[in-house]
Image (tube, rainbow, N blue to C red; front, side, top):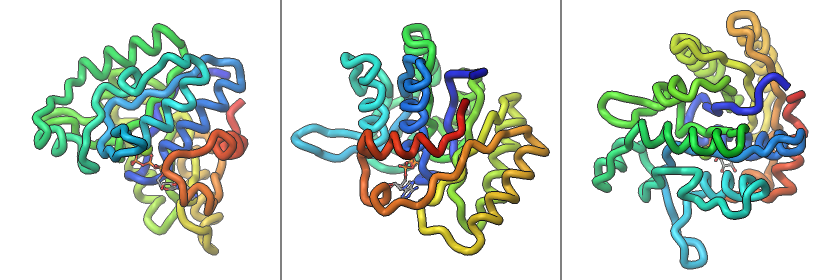
Length: 239
Ligand SMILES: Nc1ncnc2c1ncn2[C@@H]1O[C@H](COP(=O)(O)OP(=O)(O)OP(=O)(O)O)[C@@H](O)[C@H]1O
Ligand SMILES: [Mg+2]
């Protein structure tokens, strides 16, 4: 294994980044790494058993706690915002300032402690943090190999190639990509994957890590079970 830390981005919001980041953490743990998750900013909380939680942070925390049971939500995400909307807008409404240096420092603290960190972005690659900076700048700051999650649907080839160009333009390496079907497959699913496989390899030297098929059980869940994540991780062809 060449790398053990990655930045997970996606062609859009709701494409399966959390599903794949959490599954990848389990896969890396299985390979012997003490891997934990990190999310620089998360937007959208709801009440569950008397606690306010964010589903992404809960998913990443659950798999990270297998390495360190003491980890808490605030350790793996410095900014958990209440409203489910664009982070810079929610921050403004909630009177918070999303500080890039804090995001970078907290990531570095996890990297110093665990050596293997899977970082999930928020939304797509260029989601703003404030009026000047975006998550692409954060990705540049941590400089990890990038894994792109592509939700396989009409339009995904264009979205994937745009994102790949943005990643490359920042001097980052698009290490690999994952095809994910958040909706049932159709007659074009395979040809879309094959087209992307050829283009992303030829132009960006990005490896295809696998296709996560549509699963009714996954679609119905916000917090994924460890069993489901383990079965999903088996689709990731990471050696
Ligand atoms: N393979 C799949 N089969 C069925 N449903 C899926 C699949 N992958 C993801 N989903 C569903 O799609 C939704 C989005 O998934 P997920 O939360 O992992 O995406 P995300 O990219 O992390 O979103 P966000 O931008 O909010 O962080 C969830 O409701 C999830 O259950
Ligand atoms: Mg997510």
